[in-house]
Image 1 (cartoon, rainbow, N blue to C red):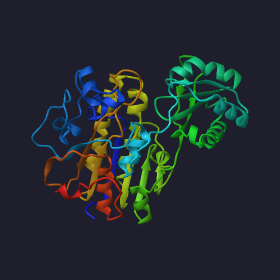
Image 2 (image 1 turned 60 degrees about the vertical axis):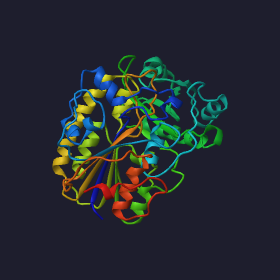
Image 3 (image 1 turned 135 degrees about the vertical axis):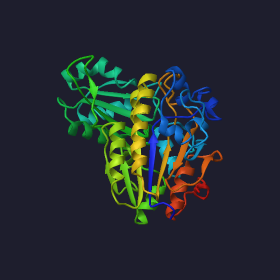
Length: 393
């Protein structure tokens, strides 16, 4: 193997421009990092700039430079969709040819809600597509008074359940979510994820979601690069919601994160450990806190804070470490609506041992990332994706 440790970091939703088929998703012109950079007067990310971000894309505040480090390219999503699970599963070698079911326009069917109420013993309120913060302001006080469960969805294939962490309890919320997962395994209701949304606060305007979220995702329908690594005796360390997205399949060690900043801090701590395999990190706040809420300034600050910690991680790398930085979809904070955006994603590859640098050929699937990892550790290659290992000099 060329690299002993691989640190794969997903900057959740940080797209790098409209995908060729973005018109199919009504996303022509979406450009998460480009548009938000122009909307905020520029982004300062010197470490990502050194890795070639400004050479790869038109980003205000990050001009192209001649002395980049490592290699960089854009990946095109092959699967049908623009959601979290589709993006992450494809990164690790899967191809999704049917989009997950959504209930954005109609809410969940009466039959589904009736079964939820019957099996849990709680009435449901909400049942619509909504912002996670707005629906708390709308229904949080009522929930605290009546114990009625706040059920809502989004443009993603998700059924989200919000409950007050202190007055209702995490255990009861999680029990409810497990029942919802069981019910929504029916083909006509099979959403990608059930998500618990615990919150605290005493009244409208003060409610905030806590880090104790949990996802109950569908299991990947086939083996991924993570399974191949684990079964071959390599370490697969999950940080953030990676373990939830893959339902712990192919994971040897998992850490929950309280925020994206915390996730990077955990990744930096893992860099002090002696392991052989991959550390796989998801940084969700870019998407959940800023992209969906169309908050360009918040997104910008999160990116700049990430860049500081990226610099600290790079300092800790050994000569035989490889860092991969990518995304799972776009979520342009300047775009209409609150949905993800169909975009190309970046892939930056850096190691202190690299002598070369530059732009690599475009990738036709996110699975090129997973194929590169599999090739490095000489495990079974995924069905999709082409390794970039031979280009890393």
